[in-house]
Image (cartoon, rainbow, N blue to C red; front, side, top):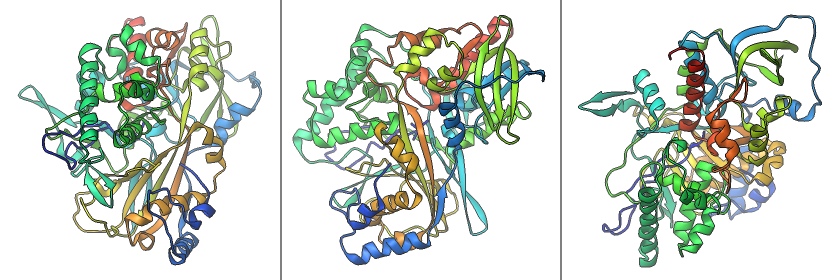
Length: 564
């Protein structure tokens, strides 16, 4: 869900504490332009013919392709007319039918199943997990796991009770002397983040500066965040902080407008805040609301932090590690490769029409209650005569397209000056979101094959271009950006697998978070229909999705007089 924290010890005067961001949960151009010289890094380009030829030669021998998403299934729903409901065969039945096996759907179905409710779960893809699915590349006779989307989970705060319970159940945390103690094997190893700035690597992601004006703006923004936390309050999940007129005012303007009004215009600060917005929300500060921009910092640890920061939980395969454990109890109840085509609410039940993608046969399902654990725009499309709140919420939703690339290297490449290899590696001024080293969590100190995961959030206008981009053009773009950072990268890379996310995450545009339609869907069901998805928060992170699924399950259990 793409979505947590940066180091607080970048270079700079000791009197100026560095921020503690909450980074990614978390793409385009033509190969011809890249091979001609432009690589997307300030001041860095394959300037000579030898470098361009080396990139061409690498592309000629490189393996890889597009993986991980069955786009044709989703586009069938978009492009086809109303489906015909088959007659004759009796429907398959469940007490509760959950549509969508992302984090929210898995959380909901898992809790219902544990309470003894007859539950079935339908998923369009062949693997569950939504944008937390994983992948693997193969080298030296073994599989190297890597993420296709979300790759970490921040340590949950006190409002994320359901997430805390999950982590305890999975053995990731225990209580000692009244405090949570996390299993070190699952905490991100140090160093966690580094930034390539002015020719060298620096610890942390806030651009280091010796300019007194820039440092003053760092302090002022930090003070603004703390004031907003104190006077308004933020939470994760977001709906567990009261919504006030002050929040509504923030939600009515963009984050960039809010910053402009306060004279917070220093380029290093604005680049950093823009990066944070693109990383967590898939869109820049000029598009997301001021509420979203402040919530990014205010819901966790603020902006300015002098002491050592807490770690995040991460795994080589990213949040797919969590997905596997959420899905395990649902064996026999989870039906993948099912495209839901239509849903109609009857007097005593809900009927669902799905297509079994393996056999090509339509399936009818019937359930007393249905949970729509789907992006809002899909939920509104499949429901015949959707409730007004769902229709309105879907109409205002906008989604960020993403591209994720997994690069297989036969050995660690040579490094530039500065801080050594880190888990998250970002370039100042780049349009991409950086590279995560999936091997950073490995306990084996011997060098060997490793996988890097490169992320990029694209403008909404480039969704169609992403859909039609050829693999070679995308691979050239990714390599050209990384070449100036690693002198022997082209010799080390063996394969690049790419993942398209046409609608990776909901963008918290102004007015979305305070939407009355979202509040209605979040707080109660719509007849026999119930919505569980991170879209209800207006943005996409694990905590929001998981909590939403759990809350809908609790609502259904209370209505049935059962206990979880």
